[in-house]
Image (cartoon, rainbow, N blue to C red; front, side, top):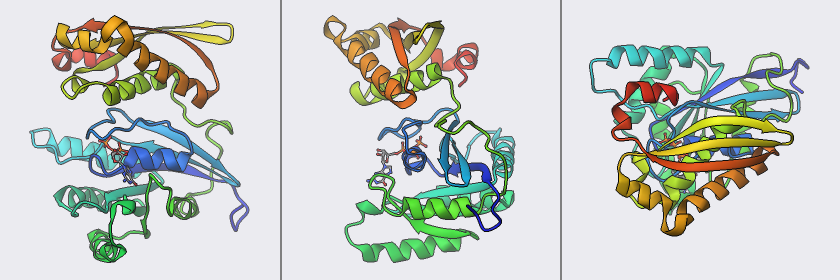
Length: 297
Ligand SMILES: Nc1nc2c(ncn2[C@@H]2O[C@H](COP(=O)(O)OP(=O)(O)OP(=O)(O)O)[C@@H](O)[C@H]2O)c(=O)[nH]1
């Protein structure tokens, strides 16, 4: 319980440039894998929310796609939207990568944060990759100069080093508020959506280099049959050759992708799923506005 005895709750947006480990860190803080991760940048395409329940608090984490300086005419409007969503959060978690030089991308995000004016904790992630701990000090100094942070924590999302200490600090910054989601909730996203993201993650990790970015996963139909959720999903690819790769010999690859994704989601949400997964060639889907909208991208 907090000093005043009141229940604390609120939204913590996780921001940072692509590939710094935002999704991995959020999963660590939530204690369950709600956001998919992969070594390829731009893995997160949509906003994912994860919920951490603790004594006297509920923290709702919002994982955002990696922010990058947009190079086109929409730049100002897009910036405004990012700043708006930052303003709506109670606290921001600004993630940086200790194993990479602090660069323009980080500076850009630090500027957006200062315009939003929301209390922010900086997480210097991936400290496990530093060969020598003396390398850490200059990085922390550099991060401190980037803005006015409530605190700066060196952490490792992979090993869990320092993440619970950082969580305590984040919770201390939350306002008093209601429990937004029932206790036990780890994410408010529908099962089918989570499954679609997991299918994409398995595909990203299993398939050869050239295929993953050509993939979109669509949930076509969801049916409840007693205890079981029946989900019909389609993996869209752009070319017939990619379809062959996704299917694999005797359909083995797609079977592996589907089974791994289904099992993990069943474990995560404690449900039973029957998954019907197919592959379809949808040429140039990446340029099809209607298609992208239908998939919520
Ligand atoms: N060694 C190490 N690797 C990490 C750590 N955190 C994340 N990674 C790795 O960094 C890569 C990117 O992690 P993600 O969590 O997908 O990064 P992200 O910032 O969400 O990426 P986008 O979705 O592209 O914005 C993955 O290969 C992770 O395993 C860490 O603390 N230590």
